Image (cartoon, rainbow, N blue to C red):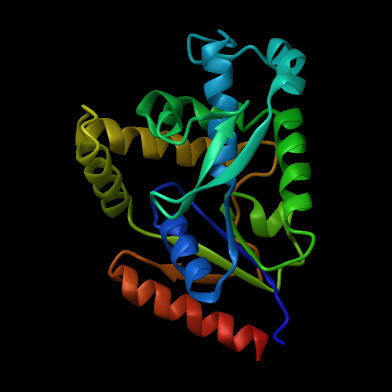
Length: 229
């Protein structure tokens, strides 16, 4: 019986890491955990409870409410994917909206929020057999992961992918708005004090700019096979 390892996938938003993680998890029968969805869930809670004022989190108030936030993933047979539930409400679609995306990196800078979610993520990965994607998976959540991937792509390609996704869902936006949001999130994710997005020295880089989804999956699968060999 093959050892079930932990695979950590990091990278900026809209570089294709979640799509790759989901596809690889399905191919090798692993559990996929979207850590970014968890931060989006906390952000949605804060927005609903007026804990963000003029784009700035009210940190003291956020900390007072942290214990009221319960996040879980539940399998959705209609989509064959795991949806995020916030306090027993399916919020999978709501957390993908632009206003949540505009605030999530700011919520993610709060030390106590990261500590809460990292603790929950580490519990999910105790037995291995999982693929988790995010910003600090290889550096903080699973520093001992057997396979670490760092996914990247050009800003233009990332913005176009995100713009196309939003348009397909009927969400009104412009390419420039999406592009500016990505650049702003990159800045916050890479320069925050708590668990900034970094490429660890033992991570394998996958640049998805010119790769199809099938080519990305093939490459990741080859790296997986090499790791467990």
